Amino acid sequence: MAEPVYTSSTERVQSWLEGRALHIRFNNPAKHNALSVDMWEAVPPLLELARDDDRVRLIVFSGAGEKAFVSGADISQFEDMRAAREAVTYYEKMAEKTLMGIYDFPKPTLACIRGYCIGGGVNVAISCDIRIAATDSVFSIPAARLGLGYRYSAMKNLVDLVGPGAAKDLFFTGRRIDAAEARSIGLVSRTAAGEALDALLAEYSTAFAENAPLTVMAGKAIMREILKPSPDLDMDLCTSLIRGCFESADYTEGRTAFMQKRKPVFTGR
Image (tube, rainbow, N blue to C red; front, top):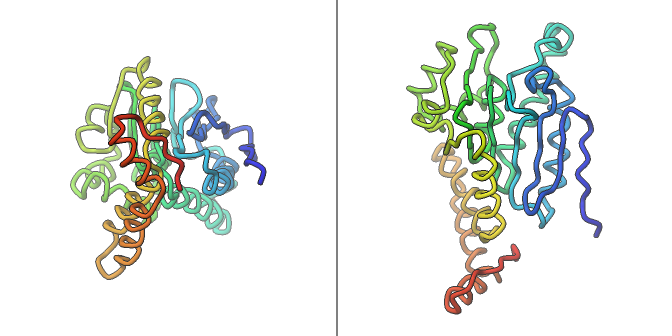
């Protein structure tokens, strides 16, 4: 079976495989990587290719240039894409499909943030498992300043991540916070000076390339179950995932490598 080729449907989204990481970069720097409809549309097909590609153990989202991860929606499309009811429905459908595709992706996802991370940019970031940011990054959810309705899934992701108190503060005020405050409330995992962010990203890429993918994916799936309301919790799925790890060749390799005092080589089998 031929290995997937990661070609984006628009030049505003770049994609490439680097080691074990698939990079998806929002490429609209003239507008601080504001998200246009074609950018939302480009992401799900890339995720679908990566889902069954054994080469991919991590998805990295970033923004082109040094000024922004994503600065929100492309306001120039509001009249065309969001003014009419049908257009609003389509825009929201595509945004929801992309964000839930990131959130539900079985492999780890990471947002590497530089500069502005505003509105839709925050939604992309909090759909990822891990967020790292340059120390000069800026975060904001300005929906209340624009009169926008905010979808349930995005609000739930925010509350699950930072708690209801911090979520209400950010959402009700629409204020901007710096990377230090974002880290203090749990919006980002780690920060680094701009020139050191690539090294921090490389640290994560190396860890996911070396660690047992079945264990990582099982852990991600179980954590997702934990966040569900109790009646929806699939304990059988959790048990099956754990059993799958212990029955895998990777578990045998991990034990053997430990006994032999060498670094394990995991295959995802």
